[in-house]
Image (spheres, each protein chain N blue to C red):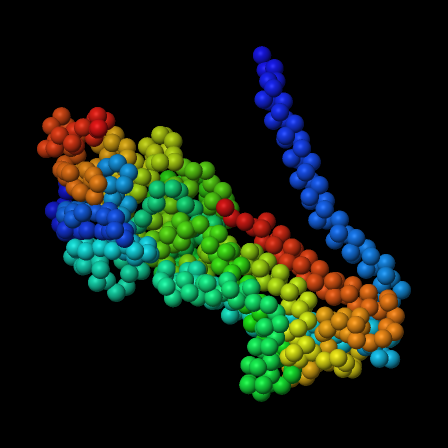
Amino acid sequence: MVNAAAKIRVKDLRVSYGTQQALKGISFDIFTNEILAIIGPAQSGKTTLLRTINRTLEFTAGAHYSGSVKVDEVEVGKVKNIYELRRKIGMVAPLPVGLPLTIYDNVAFAPRMGGMRHKSDIDAVVERCLRQAALWDEVKDRLDTLGTKLSGGQQQRLTIARALSHEPEILCLDEFSIAIDPVTTMRIEEVLRELRREMTIILVTNLVQQARRLSDRTLFLFAGEVVELDRSEVIFSDRPAQQKTYDYVNGIFG
Amino acid sequence: MFEATEHTRRMQRREGIIKYLLSAMTLLIVLPLVLIVLFLLYKAAPVLSLDFLLENPIHGMRAGGVWAPLLGTIYLVLISLLIATPVGVFAAVYLNEYAGDTWVTRAVNLAVVNLAGVPSIVHALFGLGAFVLFAGMGRSILAASLTLAIMTLPVIIASTKEALAAVPLPFRQACWNLGATRWQTIRHVVLPNSISGILTGIILQVSRAAGETAPVMFTGAVFFKAIRPGDPFAYGLLDQCMALSMHLFTVSTQVPDVPEPITYGTAVVLLGVVLLFNALAILIRFRLRSRKKW
């Protein structure tokens, strides 16, 4: 089931904000069409990792990284068309951030910025993405209302629809279920299982159960270092390789 | 249950006093304004009419209207804003959205803040030296407008920066994640959501530009100039002009025996111009705020 080709290769990645080290030399591969869960407490560098991959790290003053991150065997630091790179990676941020635009314009934003002009093309993208994000039925009659007026769970699905609008090959979800109820979370997880056939998914989550349910492999990141990366069955079993992993997963972390 | 303790009673008393005090202070602000306006209107009542607006001053300012200075002020304000707005807004966009936190930008920001505090008479001297003499524009509407533009620029930059900074960062991050460039993000998300604040800052500068006397006196406004009454295109860019602020100074201190209503009428018109622009600002803000998006 897991395709052996590496979609993303991270090698000895170190990231620091000023004097503060966020990632302290981590190395791992992410395979094509797998769901990789990244778990770990706050401040362990999960979001930093995602921001390094799509090169939005450089918007933070004082951020610096060394080492290598390759997407499809291309070093991201050497990418000239960073906008193309970012479109290749769908990013769902932790807080649902509906852009202060209509629902339609939220989803149409990336295609338009990418140069799509014809209304019928954009219409098609909007409908496809909203359907994929399991939001279409709820909003199809009010596409011209503000995205920011939607409920938290709907906004979260809107951001997922938006992240899908530029047809990414990699989808990163950063604690997407933080603001939504369990039922909606389940629906989105269903969506993700569908999507993994088309794309590689990185799931940053604080919910250990969610990682267990969804992911093929799980990476436990702690204080900027990889504690353990293995098949999720192993990580969430009685005997992962590291005692620390067992303690964290079972909530007896000191 | 629920009996008031000594402490609660004390708090309630304090609450009452504070509320009374605060509302009294508010009244204290409003009262002088109302009194000033009423006083001016009362004194100016005999001359106030449409003719007063559309006629030039005659008989050595002792009769007639305020057309020439009124039109001059409108020219000066509009042209100075036309110059200061694009420069100020784009500079603010650069400083807030593009420039990193380096010592250069910090120095520029400091300069902007300090420039905003420079007295208008200093701007006047600068305008005289730079535009009238050095650039050879002579004393003209153009030179005076440029001087006013230089004077209002720092405040426009500061207020625009503030309006831009009020747009939450996550909106920008979301756009960047979608592969939008900085400019696309600014153009489609940041500017539409800060435009009401930006416009408010700009229009508030109108009152300053309209009210300042020294800068225009040094660079383009004259004691007297007759123009075609009622013709809105009576001034050329390189003409000298009259200005309401200076005209008010003239009729109240420089010319003897000016009838009182004319002096107060001039003040009412100046106040009216400023209030009109402010009302416009409020209207625009109200319209844009009803479209507030988060």
